[in-house]
Length: 231
Image (cartoon, rainbow, N blue to C red):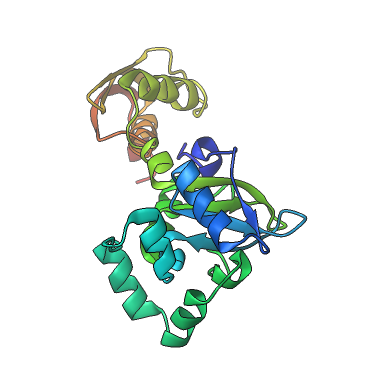
């Protein structure tokens, strides 16, 4: 039920190769309005990522593309001070190609990765975008923070439809024809009757795990209390 990266990722992805020049990488970032771009080899394997922070080590990038007085965001400046050895910074300041600029190995995710796990990975590494790769490391797409917000900001109708189709009608070996689902402002109300009390507990737990659900109001009743049978 939890959304996977494949459900929200962008499949139309711009990338560069290791020989792409500094200027062309900068043009790609600005043209497509992205903060980072994957670097791939001839077969599409992700070798690394070039970010705006990597380019900002070059003064000419600041002056030419952002203006002489531009300073990167505080988070970028602090991260660079803490994580980047001075030798690495100096090397990137002299870099001429994507291969010299990129941060490697790249932090990537698989299409089947849980969206929540992808968000945690972004937070852990302080990045806004993650390349999505297949089992062989080939680029399949990119998932961004904005993409992951789709798992949270969902319409009540969409949430209700998923609960009815995937849980009420599809997840239990029980008669759920008398179960009703109502969603208002991401709060789900389950009402009606199910055969066993255990079915109620299962329905509520599964509904709580649906992306976009804030709370579950349980108004279900049961015909038989099977939880007492094991005592």
